[in-house]
Image 1 (cartoon, rainbow, N blue to C red):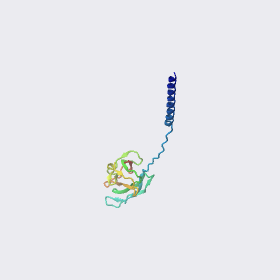
Image 2 (tube, rainbow, N blue to C red):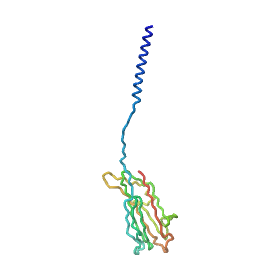
Image 3 (cartoon, rainbow, N blue to C red):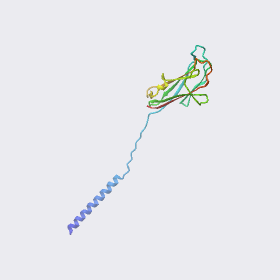
Image 4 (cartoon, rainbow, N blue to C red):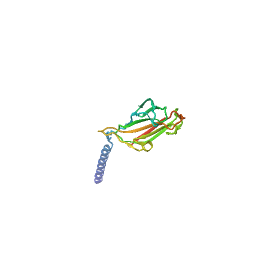
Length: 197
């Protein structure tokens, strides 16, 4: 009998040791683990119009040009360039250069360019060019606007000047016009959509 009692005591002792080991193991696994870290983005996005310059009026027929700016060309809100030109003689032409600047560190891709013309009240889509009428031509860095999509305006290097792109707008009254056009006012809207390259 005592041998049985001794085996029983050893078994109870072993079970107590196992329970204590399990309790310590659970306590070790039940601790809260805390990970502290910091992530920082240092890249910047800053693509905007920075200047607009008015060209000198000209006339393709050789007469003294009568084109003039009704109001000064301006940039407002960093993303809108506005000009207001007035023609009096067929062949009158005005030209504008609008500078887009990438002051950010991220490269910007020109994802989409949309140019539309509308009547004076903003209704009715008109052609950018029309016989006898007011005409627009838009180029971006010397390329027709429709083929300028997907060009990349590089981000500003940390040790150099910002990269720029030039939008050239030429507006003229058809030199062959013999009558006043039906649409004496034609509004131009050009939308440039830049995305991260």
